[in-house]
Length: 309
Image (cartoon, rainbow, N blue to C red; front, side):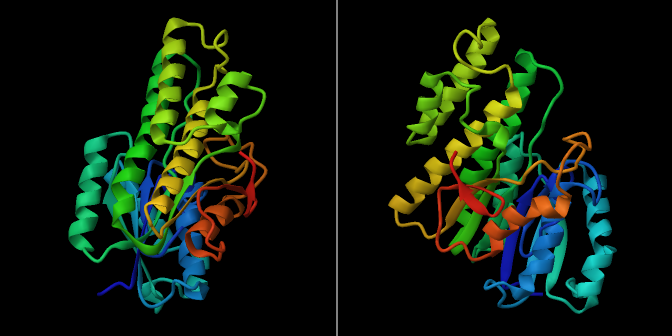
């Protein structure tokens, strides 16, 4: 079958990723339909037919590090009651096909292999990428910081750089960040200003390196950083996304690139303490991937609107 639209969503097996659809690549990490990644895939599939992107069949790549979990996630979505009722999937007469593909966003060679696969399979380009993959580890020490930054910041940066060139004009790239990365009082004035005034990905990467070095030396608090690996990694994602969006626009690129916070969602990552369902959490990422956002790029979104970082 020839597909008119293609999307990629990472991190769809845990967190918001599992409920988006279209020609989409989803990286699954673990979990079933109660994770926000699957919710993103599902809602992409549900919303595609009524979106301005609809001009024919839509393929979503659901990706995961673990083949068994990835295949199980695809099966879960194929049997999903809401998708069946809407007749969204191809087996039920709809436009959407969901396929599994292996991807570990914490490993650069895996991202490169996935990008090469997409380029070979879809030389005409893809239409959407939602980078939802990420980890939130317990505890705080040098190892936790290194692992968290490698996956959340460096992995998302590498995925963004590798997949953005594959997106056709008019397409979308969405990086899922978090309000935990908001530039509030957890940072010193100097660090907050460094984030706010950053212009390039190098500026943001230097901040991530400074945080990691301070943690290694055991003096991150004295240097104005919080003892919070996840929060700092998400500040990095928001800043990096803004920098890439501005660079892309300055170079004449026509892809809309934004970051967002899905909200405090009930998932394994929040230990079930969230205030939103996974479908509610998927609304903003899906809006940025499929909806009318009036050409907005380089912004940070929450509750389906632009907010101050």
